[in-house]
Length: 359
Image (cartoon, rainbow, N blue to C red; front, side, top):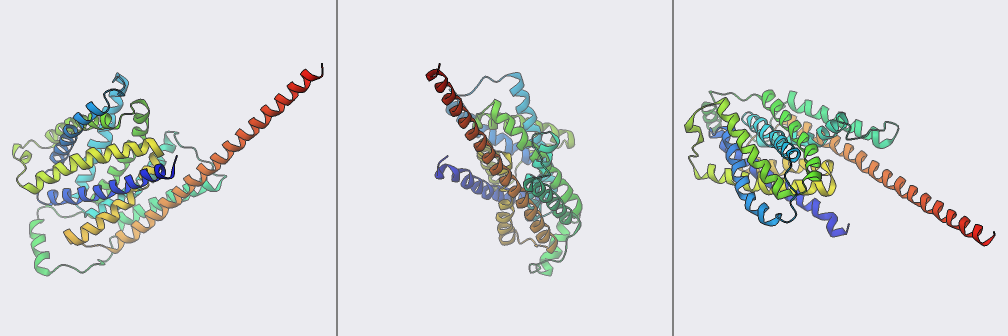
């Protein structure tokens, strides 16, 4: 792979992280205005499917494999886990906590991915090596940071808003108090679902290697699943009506950019560099979200969220260091085995030549 080719997934994931931060900011504003979270998910996935369908049809019509029953089931299950359940839990958690704090739990996605990969025997662990011990240490540190995020809120680090504004906010949200722990647990559960999707998508990319088509189909399935779930939870026609331009723009942005182009980009990155590399860029979502959250929504930033995020990111990159070291060691061993095989073949050829020359 060339130097330019190596940087493409990196730049792509940074752009995707920036786009996700904007999507989460707009969705938070919609939720604060009272829009139902599953209605948001349904419209988001519907717009994603409508946007991607013609692109997938014309772009991949010659290379697209036949949609078998097995591929159909993989895409349906991938949509349920990675789109429907992930968005339901994440958006429900966003009702109780800020965008920045919610995005802090996204930093646990690579560690969750590693844990699930171990459980399903998709990842090997060698405790006798430095890389193996680093992966375990990083996992425990990251999980400790997640517990710290849930249990410790701490003092506000930014200037509090005026008393009039605070009183107004309390009156608006009086019917439903914020629950720090509930929002944290819901966000963490959503991140576990997203981690499971990374592993499922790695499998889907092999059996159906068409990013636009697979994302369009999963968005279609996700829209149907989200609509069914919203009707089961709450049957009220008025909740399906978007009342402002902000809601329409937010849904279209979340669908076309968030669930459309971003998922296509992540699927491509997973295919190029694997699920752990792709999920390693999740801390940038929190960094970008914090910038928007503080400057636009004027949300408080608390000591607990800062300390917890630092611990989570520290554990994350210890894990990634272990993964990188393991990959380098495997590459060196593979190169050594190749050299030994070449030497063995050379010796065999020399012996064969000598035996022919000396009958």
